Amino acid sequence: MIRRLLLLALCAGLAVGGARADDSVAVLAVADAPAGPDGQLAELARELGAACRERSRAVLDPRELRARLAGQPPPARLAELERTAAAAVLQYQSGDYARSVRTWRGVVEELERLQDGPESYEPWTRAVLRLAHAEGTLRHWAEARAAMAKLLAVEPRFAPDPDEYSPSYRRLFDEVRQKLRGRPPRRLTITSGGRSGAAFVNGKAVGATPVTVTLPAGRYRVGGSSEGLRSPPEEVDLGSGDRSVALDFALAESVRLDAGPGLAASEGGRVEILRRVAPALGVARLLLVTRVEGDAQLDGALYDVGQRAVVRQGRVPLSGGRAPPAAIEALAIHLLTGQHLPRVREVIPAPAPLVRAAAGSDATAPSVTAPLQVPAPEPAPDGKRTAPAPGGPDFKDSE
Image 1 (tube, helix red, strand yellow):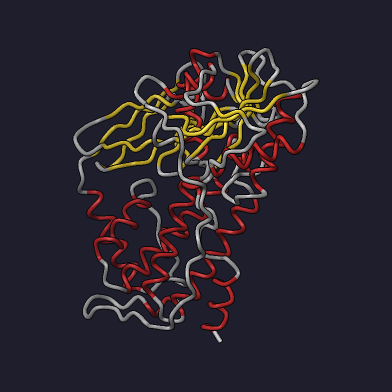
Image 2 (cartoon, helix red, strand yellow):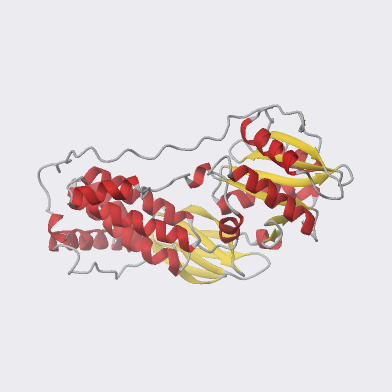
């Protein structure tokens, strides 16, 4: 029965992803600061985004995009991860320990991409405990200890629930706790320029900036939020000494949640804004929508975050500030696939101020990029049980 439920869960798409966050595309209206995109440009961006979503599930809808910009984990995303966690439990209970480990790793990674706060920290804590448990069942001791240490470094007094976890698991947990106490203490000072905000270490709130915390030597994920908008997280190594980190809340001043959503940025500052907004969104590509040539044309530019370059661009004419649906559709097809369509004026190389700033001096924009791909779902379990290696404590009595 458990095996059948597991198969149904996975077939229903409970494995982490769908379109993974790294493959996502964010559609953003962009206009000069301080005003940013007006109502017409915001509507054009929404129309182009809708046409793109009809052809690729990698393109984020405006509601999810606003939630990411505002640092609010979408309830649907949290519910999806909760279902994925339930699938990981079923995988473990059915004896498919290796698949359970992979699923838990994915859940932890996805939760770490969300905005820090209680909505993501509590499920992250549960997922890390389960991941360490599944790793231990497979006798992956280094991985199990690393997962435990990630939590204990910021929650040194945390104790697993004895009703959920076996004595052997809790003994290993205490061993990791004692080892962390033997590491040299480091001071981490977190500041923020221009405004104060909430600071987080490994997802745990540690106070308002400026704040200094003492932690065991090691690597940490540091993030923050101010007025509902997040600072891009960064990895900090406290292995060799104390560190100071300055959170970047400048992005909050450029975001326009209700205009597309969109960004307000001057020509000279757009490249820096793009480099900041991409990590905050957790996307691989940005589809930047603006007006050019005296607002006579709608310009769409597909910006690749990894290459730091515009890889495809096209324009369609506007009449009275509007574009015919057929022109919007043609522009969407061109941007997603590279298909040459008569309605779209291709721009190679792109002379628009937005694109010159986006490409930057350190990147060369190629004329084409691969079409967006929809990732295939992970295959259903093959029914094979992965046996743990001999030796070590038995964690299986905790399920």
